Length: 80
Image (cartoon, helix red, strand yellow):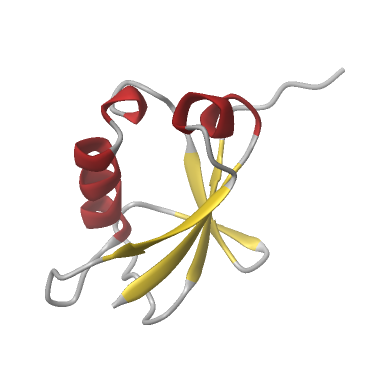
């Protein structure tokens, strides 16, 4: 399945792209599978901390990856 990935802040800088598509071939993939695939394709993400968001909600690594979804990688944020 094709997954649209969007990256923000330092993650986009590390990868050199703000958005791209990636093919996920695992059967019934989870977001953990996507994280592993991203770390393979972009080794610079392997040590990075980020959360996934699908639509307008954060999602945990254990959640299923919806077919043909758009997934955002959100780096840690701080505020004041």
